[in-house]
Image (tube, rainbow, N blue to C red; front, side, top):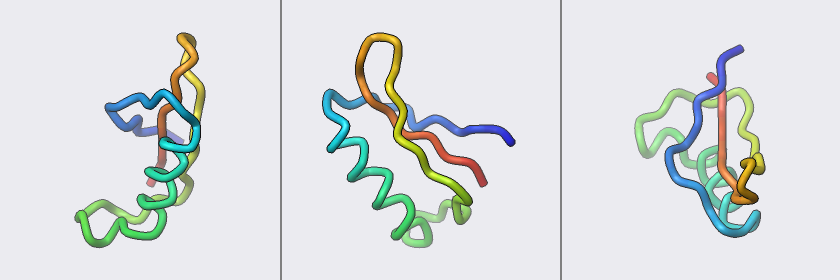
Length: 54
């Protein structure tokens, strides 16, 4: 299982969570493949990002 990381990191977990939810619900609008799993993670510097796998 290979994770694909979203390029942008966010200052709050809420912001990253909003992106993750949008990816789960609106993937077909943007032409992505349907993600099997979407996850919010915390970077080493304390910022939050989103990763998913297809």
